[in-house]
Structure formats: structure tokens, C-alpha cells
Image (cartoon, rainbow, N blue to C red; front, side, top):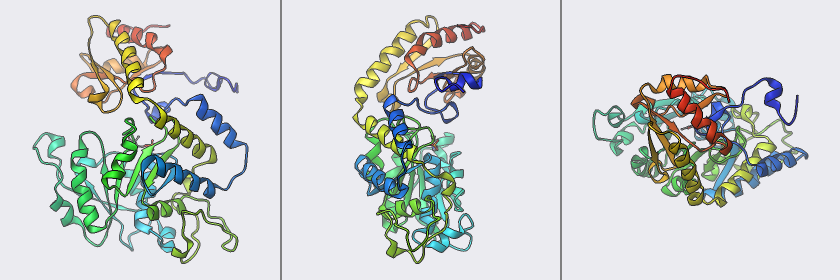
Amino acid sequence: MSPSDPYESLGVRRRINAAGALTRLGGAVMAPEVMAAMAAASRASVDIGELQDAASNRIAEATGAEAGLVTTGAAAALTLAAAASIARWDVAKMAALPHADAFPRDILIPRTHRTGYAHALAASGARLVDIGHNDRGTGAGVRGLEAWEIETALTPSVVAVTFSVNATSIVDLPTVIAVCRASGVPLIVDAAAQLPPKENLRRFIAMGADLVAFSGGKALGGPQASGILAGRRDLVASALLQQLDMDVAPETWTPPKLIDRTNLRGVPHHGIGRGFKAGKEEIVGLLTALDRFMKADDVADNAALETRLKAIAGTLAGIDVALIPAQRTGRVPVLEIAVPDALAMSARLQRNDPPVHLSERHAARGVLTLDPQVLLPEHDAPLAAAIRAALRGATVKP
Ligand SMILES: *Cc1c(COP(=O)(O)O)cnc(C)c1O
């Protein structure tokens, strides 16, 4: 295999990605600085618990949370958050998961928040209990989640409430936080793709969420298989304990500082998170990417993306395109391209050589979205050519 071009050696095609940092397309494109840090990290032995302690301090600074943990992605962070909410410091419960029917394990989930990622919460052994209505989602009505709907469902078997935050759902977040605070039930927020803006690193914690999950391999620009769980110290500690390699002798085990051993009646075995261990390379890569992300100039970066999008739009004469600025998307500027049959057009673009991907998020309303988040600048021109050709029903070879 050629180290300089592994994809070529494997016969795997490179793609033009204007669909965003999608996991199925490999997530973010990493900066050389992040790769260099990962390579340096790989050439040493370190105590992973000690490294996660250091990561916790960095994540705490970045998010304003008490503590943080590097995970193998936001989905893994959700499973660990659920496992922490169920088991807390109880080693017997840690040992039992995912079989949790003998103790409290319910997680309340608003019906408007039933995403495909709810499976990650349920994988811990939690039972998801649907609450509220989906009036806004279906267009049937105007009402969101109401406090009494959560309060009614808060039985003794409830260990957490979950919330999938985005620019639309956030209006309901203060209500949920108020109920969770009053009842002492932890709130797990899925904010996987809510970056940028970088203010969102702190926003949900500042509002009062107990645990927040972010993807490391999307906009953060970290290793694809990385993520963050930030939040309350005791819950993050339980999550870490259930992720660490626990093939340790109790007599010689030195737990990470995050874990207060006096809370434990024994030393747990490998937990539910052992299968999603974060390696030293991912931990260091994620922290390096987090550092870069926080130092980035969002305004200048978005202005540069807008300039590129305007140049692309300029070559799409006769096509119905609209530039949506970052202020309106809440993240990066995008180009919305109205086409007669969005999914057929998307399929044509994917048959292009090289394959081209636009976001199908708004295909149902006849729009393909050109999302430049991870689009390489050298792909701008071939992308525009492929769009023009696909609209003529043809495909082009470069
Ligand atoms: C991408 C995503 C996830 C999963 O994130 P990974 O880092 O890929 O595990 C979870 N929730 C939402 C809303 C997402 O967009």
C-alpha cells in the first residue's frame, strides 16, 4: 500500500464532497497540524486515564463544563451518557449493562427528538419513553414541549431526559432544563452537529444541560472517530470508568483523578463502553483540533466560504440558486439549488467521475444544498462543471 495515496492503492475513489462533514463520507478533512499531533502521540506509551484527565481539563476550559471526556464520536458519547445516568457510581449496575430491567433505566425523549441516534442511547440498556407531541414537526399545530408533559412522565424509574438540539428545537430547551433542574434528573443534550458557531461549545452547558455530546469528526476537524462528552463531573467520571480498559489489579490500579475511588464499592470490570475505546491518537488529535477550532475566525472563514460560493453560483447561469448566509443557517453559508427532481439529480451527480455529493437534506422541497464545510478549494471548479452537466442530464469526465 502506498502511504502517500492509500485510496489509490485500495482502488477507492476520492469524492467531491459538498454535502458537509457526513460520517458516511469520512467526516472532516483534517488539518496537517492535527495529523502531526496524532503521529507524535502514536509513538509513545502513556496512561490513558492520565491522558483523559488532561483532556477533561481542556474540554472543561473549552465548554465551561466541570469535566469532559474524549469518546469515539457523539453517538458513543450518547451511549456513555445514558450508561452514566443509569449506573452513576454503582459498579454492580455497570457490570449488568446493557441488561438494566432490574433497576431504574428510563430516559424521557420528546417525540420531536426521536432521531436515528436515539438507538445510541438505547444501546446502553436504557428504555426510551416518548413524551409530548410532534405538532410542529408535522405542521399540525403550534405548540412545543410543555413542562407538565415532562413532569407527568417523571416517575422514579426515570434516570435522564434527552434533547436533540438544533436551531429550531432550542426554543424548547429552557423549559426542559427548568424541569430537570427542579427534579434533579440529568439532561443529556445531543449537540453532535451544532458546531460552528464555536459559541455553541459553551452555550448548552451555560443554559444548564448536565451532559452534552459533540462530534469530533464533523466541523471540529478532529479524527473522524472522535467526539466529546462534556458536563457534570460525577456523570463524566462514570462514563469514563465504563469506557476505560479495566483489566487492572485492584491493588495497583491508579484511577484517573476524575474518578473518586471512595465512591466505588469495588473496581469495575470492562464496562459497556469498552468497545468504543478512544485511543491516544484520537484523544490528542481531538484536543489539537479543538484548540484550532476555538482560535479560528468564524467571521473571516464564513466570508471566505461566501466568496467561493458566489464564484460557483456565477458559473451556474440559468440555474435557480440562492446563497443562504451563515447568519441564517446558524453555521456555514450554503448555496441552495432548486432542481426539478432533487433526488434524481443527486443520483446523477453521484454517478459522476469523480462522484459528487450535495446535501439531500432539503430534497423533499426540491432543493439540493451545496454545503462547503469540507469542500476542498480545488474541487470548486469541477463541482460547478458537474452540476451544470448533471442538469443537462449528462455526466462529465474531468
Ligand atoms: C452526526 C450525529 C451524531 C453522531 O455523531 P458521531 O460523531 O458520528 O458519532 C449524533 N447526533 C446527531 C444529531 C448527529 O448529527
